[in-house]
Image (tube, one colour):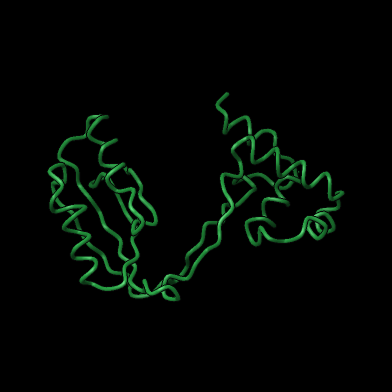
Length: 167
């Protein structure tokens, strides 16, 4: 059984309730979490530490509004690679690991990568596109999509698998 499968099997209704809470606000005091899930504060703390150690919780971050920090433009870029050997793909993944890239997905279908970027201006995007895509010999082509509005943005993952209720 893979690590993620084992972690999934070990999650009970209390773990899932805790996950729902920490995804909404990971600064919530343990005492309040404990009250909401009907466990002791120590039990909640132990469960969170176990889920961190098991790779269920992979980080604790603040979600920042890009507009508030001067990066109001969201751009989605589809990228087709020339070479798809393991080495070439790993090099592209490393090449795309820059601060302007919020998300990068290696995907199936017509393209090889889909990236989500935030930039301050279209001039900044032009320079970034030149550096990341146009000057990259392994990029066959790329397509830019400019988001007009951020309709739904989030990182929450439903803690209950599809087709299963809270057990």
